[in-house]
Amino acid sequence: MQGQAVAIMFMAIALGMDAFSIGIGIGMRGIRLLHILKISMVVAVFHLVMPLIGMFTGTYLGSLLGDIAVFTGGGLLALLGLHMMYSACTKQQIYSFDHRSWLGIMLFSIGVSIDSFSVGISLGIFAADILFTVLLFGIVGGIMSIGGLILGRKMTSWLGKYGEACGGMILFIFGLKVLM
Image 1 (cartoon, rainbow, N blue to C red):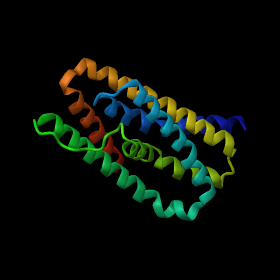
Image 2 (image 1 turned 90 degrees about the vertical axis):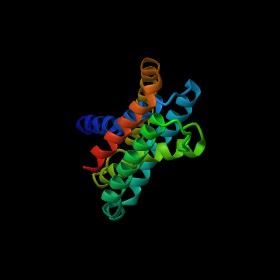
Image 3 (image 1 turned 60 degrees about the vertical axis):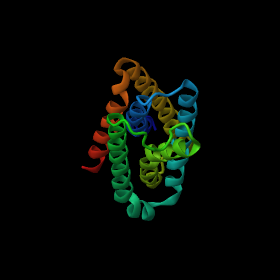
Image 4 (image 1 turned 90 degrees about the horizontal axis):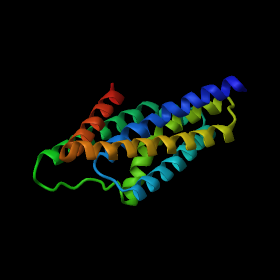
């Protein structure tokens, strides 16, 4: 059980890296502490729910969605990053998803939690402890989301008006990394 707990902890950290990395990019757009709390709580819930659903779904659905989910998520991140860089470099006001709206929070949370679904399927096959796994994934995902959003927020004050462009570049590079 101890070896399984260590492996699940490493998986939780790896899965939380999405929330951390993307949180930096979003935090660089400028974000209030209340929104950091809201976003991180929703991310934590999705990091609980997605692997839980995955653990109960089985291998069939995971084999159908695995590559498609990763490709779609990476493409969306790259497009969002390009959009943020373009918006920061032009004087025009360009519409993008508002990370403060419930729709924006839900899209962010789903985007950083979708890989937890696939991992949940794998862990379901190996009969991992469901309660321990989903609680750990949720806690780590929420904490890493807070860390990324706060770090991005601090970086904005250091970078000034270039913060959104840098955040867009981070999202773009992360999206390309996911695609490759």
